[in-house]
Length: 98
Image (cartoon, rainbow, N blue to C red; front, top):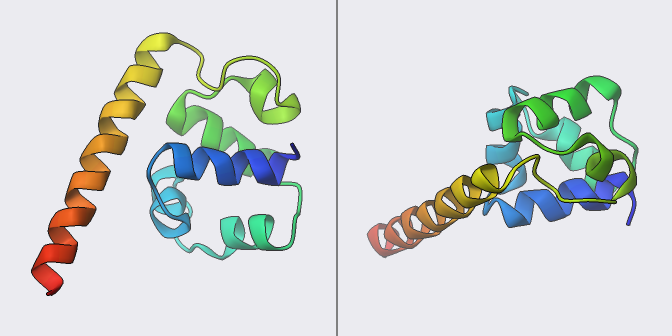
């Protein structure tokens, strides 16, 4: 799996989309992440740092795909909770749009 694929995988694992992921890491538009994924580009070091720092991502995983995604199990549990909450919020938004 290439780095752009790992980023796309991470976005899905977090229950986010490109726009919400971009905002969470501090990128004001979704063009950067969108282009990385769509055009199969390698992210810049600065983008990788933002991702690692925001989500406590294991550097070895983001660069090589080896090891655990998150630096610790507590972080994984928190991410799973946040993912579940995001799914609930999305369902509520869908109901309100009907």
